[in-house]
Amino acid sequence: MSRTLVLGAVAYDPKVVTIWDGFRHYFAEHGLDFDYVLYSNYERQVEGHFAGHYDVAWNSPLAWIEAE
Image 1 (cartoon, one colour):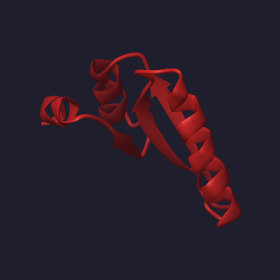
Image 2 (cartoon, helix red, strand yellow):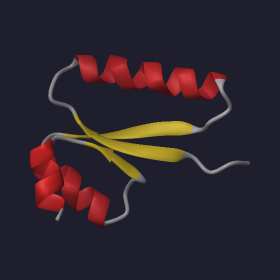
Image 3 (cartoon, helix red, strand yellow):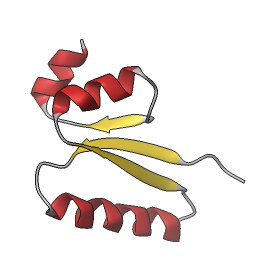
């Protein structure tokens, strides 16, 4: 069994779920286990990243600066 790649993103709009579900489906078709975790704001996303709740972040430049 392979390890799942987990992405952390902010749910800034309801369409985000559709977008990341599309990514999950695409990656599954290509043999990559992928899932995502949605946060209500960038501060929580950065905290989740530092806590190790996911592997990679999809965020804004402001969240990247906060992570520094």
